[in-house]
Image (cartoon, helix red, strand yellow):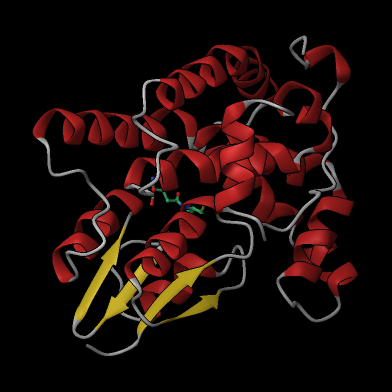
Length: 244
Ligand SMILES: N[C@@H](CCC(=O)N[C@@H](CS)C(=O)NCC(=O)O)C(=O)O
């Protein structure tokens, strides 16, 4: 097996999930952080069908999407498993993983993209983190790109307010999956990676720290994603924040 290439963005949480899955599987890999905003183009130039990270190239295979990637890695290397063998436990992990991808994963993305529209210092931070030359200039030039990326995921004031209002119940749900053993067990599974990568981004937003700190889901996320870039210098209006 050749060395895998994981195409990523410095801040992409599903790409972080894919990285931890590769590490768990012991598959040798190189992480290639693409320039945010340019990444859909750069991926297509490399022969990928879609414009999203995570994108993995391994031997002749090109796979995109964190759900497809977990199944692909399970196929190419069985051990250690990302899904339990016992059917009921496997179903629980698959359900939690799917929920994490469709419900939880969009929330930090919408918050982040909302922030990049109105907060130039966040765009500058992202430009610096991504190694862009002249980050101050990049931050100014990228304003229209930020607006476009925000629009496609519904990162509006109303969207983010609704996301924040839904967070306490979402966190309860995640802590419930830890309590019933679906995630957070001894064997890191696909749902651990999917869900915890989103929690890790939420933890990096300073204004959300009081809501998250000390919860089992936060401890798990910090354990699995210890080196996520943080804090993310994004500010949220205090009236939008749910009570801790
Ligand atoms: N649900 C997909 C989403 C992937 C995704 O949207 N990734 C973002 C970065 S976190 C991206 O590359 N977006 C590019 C775009 O929206 O054009 C997955 O889990 O892989």
